[in-house]
Amino acid sequence: MVQQRKNLNFSELEQWLNERRVTEIECLVPDLTGVARGKILPREKFTEDRGMRLPEAIVAIGVTGEFPQEGPYYDVITPTDRDMHLRPDPSTVRLVPWASDPTAQVIHDCFDRDGRLIPYAPRTVLRRVCELYEAEGWQAVVAPELEFYLVERATDPNMPLRPPKGRSGRAETSRQAYSIDAVNEFDPLFEDIYDYCEKMELNVDTLIHEVGAGQMEINFFHDEPLQLADEVFFFKRTIRETALRHEMYATFMAKPMAHEPGSAMHVHQSVVDRRTRRNIFSNEDGTPSREFYWYIGGLQRYIPAAMALFAPYVNSYRRLVRATAAPINIQWAFDNRTVGIRSPVATPAARRVENRVIGADANPYVALAATLACGWLGIKKRIEPTPECRGDAYLGDYTLPRSLGEALSLLRAEKDLHEVLGEPFITVYTEIKEVEYAEFMKVISPWEREHLLLHV
Image (cartoon, rainbow, N blue to C red; front, side):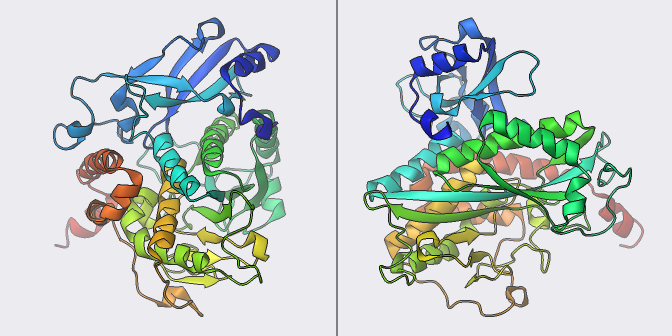
């Protein structure tokens, strides 16, 4: 059904809605943070010629909801706050399984009044990168692995987060990696999650318990990047809603608890020839191809500059520390989880590269666009990778940015990524992140009060 829905037109979308007796439509637009913006319409108001609009800055909001007061941001976005024109993508229609009345959700693309895609909208950026692959006769293929934590409800932001209580009435106090029993502690929650995912026709594959207390991971089947980004976007909404219904929170923060590992969104990626359907990462004899190595070379060359896209918040950099199942550098290897760029054991047809740097807090559209851009540049520029890491990459030096401020400086300086992702997007994104970073720097942490108040 998911495959059949890819080429729906609006009349077929209306038939889909009518068959399910939908009475309400959530018209969604993913913003720069991955938050769902938009409007809710009665079914009868959802028509092809309606011309729904939103202010153009709505997709260019940071996590604090603040905007720059001046500067390059307004070279891209007009100070007059003019409208974007929204068009539904019929292929994205899904039921809202937790709604009391039959409700559908549809993701929309953003256009200006002349019919051009808004260049800084996350879906536009991903489309732009996918079109570069299409121009070469290629199809990018991705498969995200998304980690998240279940935590107790926490209404006071000054209090540390804690794992929730399971069916036994007890919270986890130790690491339970891959434990079936630990997952079963939350059976009622996961039964609802799988039920909702089935009703939404999301291509989720496996569920595992990760290393942290209350940390889980969902894997997605491989597919085209835009479809997978849409599915991750929907899945995050689904997990949060389901957790709330079970009196807990689900969080995709990169590092929600100080003494637990962080959460990643590992992305497996490969490239196939659109005509022959051959994986271009493998030669005819099954050995790794030049394109495979160039792709890795591109990731190594550009990941540091793309870190503000993979690790978008000040909290993101707390995850990237030694020996905590997160990389600290851009070394690569076969079947080695200490590196930032890993190639799992696979058949030649399934040969792929795993980017382990991306955090679970990253916008899926932006993260997929950025990692595919790095690899595309590597192939086009024939960038050779460093020698394979044969040991523990944690024994090497840090080569990734250590803070959001450093990452933003690297992104602003890397013109190759500007060209691939679009200058308007880079401008809007970096300006918004500077506002967030400045807001964070106004906060005095408990650590500062504890160690500096009477000792400096």
